[in-house]
Image (cartoon, rainbow over all chains, first blue to last red; front, side, top):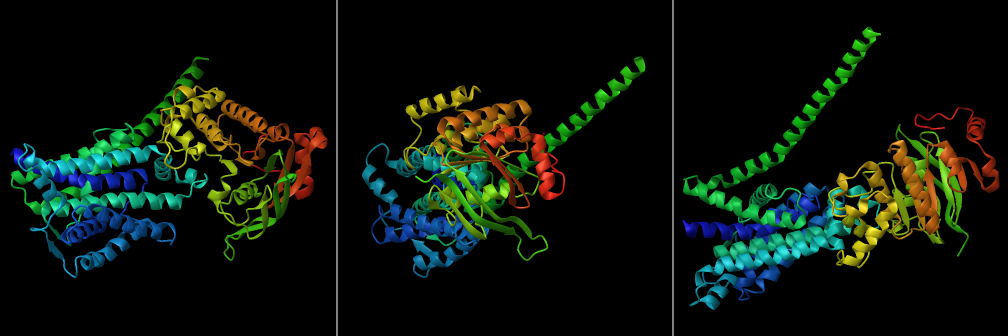
Length: 316
Length: 264
């Protein structure tokens, strides 16, 4: 059971890097990046190809750079080429499918059973020490820690504030001296670098990559992000980042538990869809209900003074 | 240093050309704004006042004519580049600040200090505190609060502070107090006067309050149908009354100055 929990945690941490990417693009920049699935697979493929070529360490920056390139194209389409932001993501996502197969050398599957990966590298380093069995967890934790620190630091800089302001009040940033196109491009490049890294780590963790590795990743990450939001409501960006990681881990642990209770594995994607629907439409109905209550109260308080006035009139 | 800060030369703007909604918003308008001028702009609805400010700030490019700011031709310059030397306040107090970000984060963004990778330092906070104190609204003790929690007047005052953080060459005020209650509007007008005169900022202000149009600044222009129909400044302006403005408008346009929000 403990072993199962640890595996869930490791997978949760790895996917939390994609959740952090969405925290930047979806929560901060207010762009729903529909190329996430493709960028995740791209990172996985590029990382795998570089690792198979014998450079496990290089696979990390290579996957991130591939993510940057993909994010750059998505951002360029929506800021400079007049393509709607959602459509830009879809178009890039579709294009990436072919690119990903091309990266894997006209194949939809790569096996890394005998390949040196960042995981196997650390496993050798730690062999014989008490931490020998924790090598996967250590790498996942390390990656998440580094990305979290980078993201928190980034969001505190003027660039980060500009990204937040662009997502928060576009009209304001448009009328300031900040070029919103450049901000969107930078934001999507960074977020897709995270997505690429996440894909690269998952592929090496699984010791294989196939073309479907990223399918549904956007919805799963979005579900995690929205779960994470419940932990720290309105507590600043550092807590937001923490919540994103926590959300990803909680999502994965719940999923693992559900599998234990004989839930078929194929339900993962349906459940993540339902979570996203509930998490977004829940607050929507809540605010609608609150507005309705307010209207009802307002109607009552409008009627009350009228009743009083007519009463006073009779007294005079 | 030329004497003109803003030189508008025969600009024209028509919206929806070729459609039934075609609207000549500005027709052949020229205006020479001297360095340090504080001009109040009045006119009925649809006279082209906001269009004029939007043309200057670069929300759209004009169909004809040139706009020169402090000797630089900005006719073709994109909005965000003009924003380096032009500050702007809208009527809607929600438009000038990011509600989910704190007061100090909004100010830091406006201060454009320390490059893209710099972050808020202790010194920055001291500076922000000093400047916020000048507003007299107690915002200096709420620097970590999200701006969304502030009232409309407080947000507009903060926007004013942000727009003038580095005194711009030109400040454009588009009825920036029209959405505020009278007392708050008064306060924001006072702040505007103070900040503009202290930094000697050249300023264009649209207002619907005829009285304050004549009291504020050193020059008043009246617009109708996309052109300037009356322009008065200096000694002559001191003698002008609200009644004169109304008469003048009737003379030139042959109709009463109608405006649902006009305040005499």
